[in-house]
Length: 358
Image (cartoon, rainbow, N blue to C red; front, side):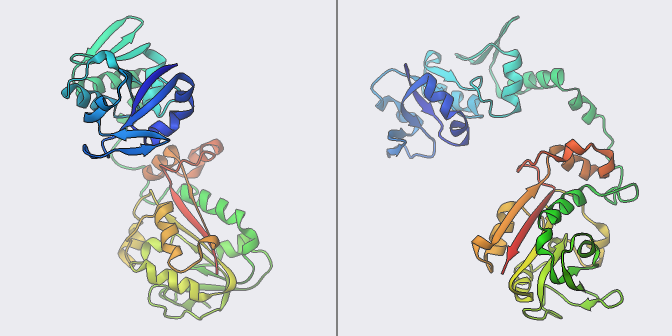
C-alpha cells in the first residue's frame, strides 16, 4: 500500500477517511494550525507544520485533503516541493461537495504542475496557473450541468411577495412550524398559553383544560397583557405549555425572555419555541416592536441552556436551500412540491425550533 503524508485533518479529511485508509498507508500529517517549532500527535501519527514535512524520512507523496487544495499546492510550491510528490483527493469519493461531484463527471485526473494545477479531460489537459482561472473553468462546468444556475441569474431583483406569500397561500416557514408542533402535539395539554392568538392551541391541543393568549399590548378580547422581555404579566408556575412561534426574533433581551419562559412554566411543563434563521424581515413587526435576531441550532441551544437543563432541550433546524431561497423570494408553500420540504439541510435552515421542559 502506498505511503502518504496527509495535508489537512479537518472535516474534509474525516469525510474521506474511510476510503483513504483503503488506498493509502498514512505515515503523518501536515497542518497549518501547528506551529513550525512544535510537533503534535493525531491518530497515533506525528503532525507538523507543512514547512517541516522533511522530518518524515520516507519520500512519500503528500496528499492534499482540503477543499482549498489549490492554495495548499501553492503553499507547498513556494517552499520548493516538486509536483511529482503531490496528490489531490478531490476526485476521491465520497465527494465532499457539489464542486467535486461536477469535477468527477468531467475530469479524469487532477495533478500538480510547475505553474499551477493540471486538469485532464478526455479532450486533453489544461493548466491553470491561478485560482481565478480555475474558478472560471468551474463556472463553465456548472453552467454546463445546471440550467438552474443560468435561470437564477435571470431572476428579477425584487421578490414575488414581501408578505411571505401570505396573500396567495401558506408561508413556507409555517409548514415547518406546523410539522414541529405536530411532533409535539402530546405536550400541548392542560393550561396552554400561546403568543398573540390561540390558533395553534386549537389546531394541535390535546386535552387542553384552559387556553390563554399573551400579547405585549394586550390586543384582543380576553387576552393577557404580558411581556416576556420585562416579565410584566408573567405569573410564575402558571402554565403547562407555552406555544411561542416566531416571537424571539422580535425581543431584544432574549436572555430575559428565556428566564421568563422558565418562570411561566409549571414543573414538568413544556415550551415549544420557533424562530427564523433565513427569512425576510417582517416589516409589520419591525416597525411595531422591532426585529433583532436570527437563530441557529447552536445559538438556540446555548440560549435555553442558560436556564434549562441540557437534557430537557431538543433543538432542530428545518429547511434546505430550495425552500430557503423560495422563502426569501416570497413564494408560498403551494408554489412548491411536497417533496421539496423533505430534506433538512443544517446549512440552510429556514426555521429553528426548540422543545424545552422545566
